[in-house]
Image 1 (spheres, rainbow, N blue to C red):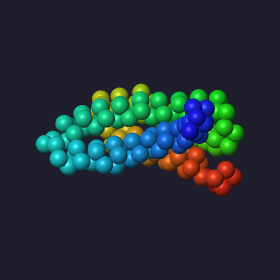
Image 2 (image 1 turned 60 degrees about the vertical axis):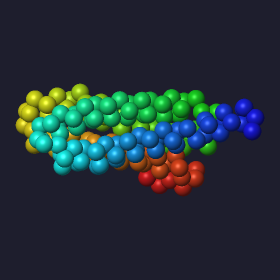
Image 3 (image 1 turned 180 degrees about the vertical axis):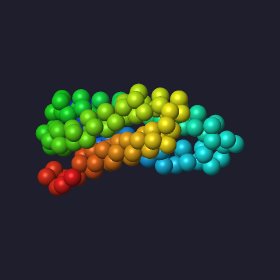
Length: 150
């Protein structure tokens, strides 16, 4: 395979892999690792402190993946991939926004234990919506052009 063909193939599949990384990292952290922390660490406070660090790291993974996808949507030289990315822009932008709001608006209130039940619920809902946005983005990029109906 010549170098130009390899680059073109990489530009075609990289956004799908990045979207899949974004979606799967949200799922692994939120639905597997954090529940395991609460089930296995000695106190909920220890589990919560570790979960907060993991969610902060996940925020930056989400932002980087989202920004990569947004940049790919502007500069893709592969027309079908460009159309798929442009169809997912709303979900990508919403996912980035949810990640940043959770980190800078909700997390400080949870850490301060300010109306903990309310803010934990808001943060959980935002995380679930972000996971959904990443999933829709992955699905749109994986589906044949014109077949994604979300």
